[in-house]
Image 1: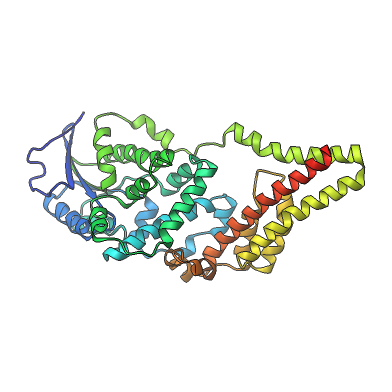
Image 2: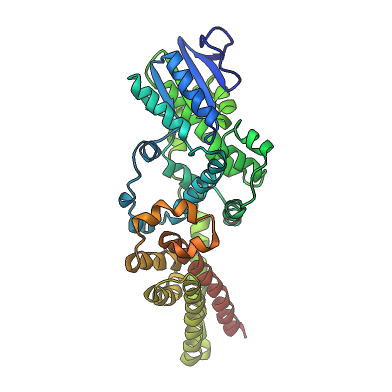
Length: 401
């Protein structure tokens, strides 16, 4: 069992940001940080140097650790594979959140995650083992995306975009408040209670994961560096054994049967209606309805590609793909168009590197080739969705009229 203690562990007083947990015969020193605070950077270095722990645990997974400790190798990011795996949405959310942190960090003069980098560097200098204790960021984002309803996905994207495009300076009081908490927690609180499932995945599940990974790390005396927003939840979870929950919270939720049924019901309804129109009203009327379906889907999708300033081949692919992809839930016109855009107009390495800055300006979305891929994905997808409803309404009207 774990208990909180105020005994002389650690031997030094570091203030309210440092919490101590005794777990069995082990001492776990939790250092709560703000990911954009210079004070947190200095605190982490001080605690590790003075405590000389057996292990330093970090709120990082392998990918985020290598991104912090090494120059990001954008060449390793295979956009084509990401699109094939239908993970563009999660990549976009990741970029938006990273950019949000970077904007706040810029006003404080600190690179987001600088305290985690300092912890890793200090541990290396002192030859202390480092344990990466956070869940794979790809799993976190995919679970978050799947746990959020369609309407709330739109709310999330709108909230993130609004935060990014808001160029007003943060007040001194707000800056002081941000230094005392994790930026991600602050963002969740700003969204209020509208996204409880998202908070559960991003905060609560990771509290469980972090605690169990820290417990399994080697050593009797451990310093764990985590976002301040995780501390309260983690302290509570130390008193119980949550190891059995790890399998569940590291799995990607499957698509629900109801969603699959709904996804196939619309294509079956459209195709069935076209067949019935042919039987009841003749091949000419059915052919006219089919042509209307093609144009109703293809034109809005192509317009979406044009608004994205996509390559002409991408625009043609949007027009051609939308009438077909609208009849299958397996893949959307947005993914097809994005894939073609990457093939004919691949983003440059430097555009990956400045995407976090460009994403905060309207002009940047069209100037940066990486962000333009997201525009193609979003706008052609919206165009195709509009076309599905317009074309479907016309076909049903012909059937019932």
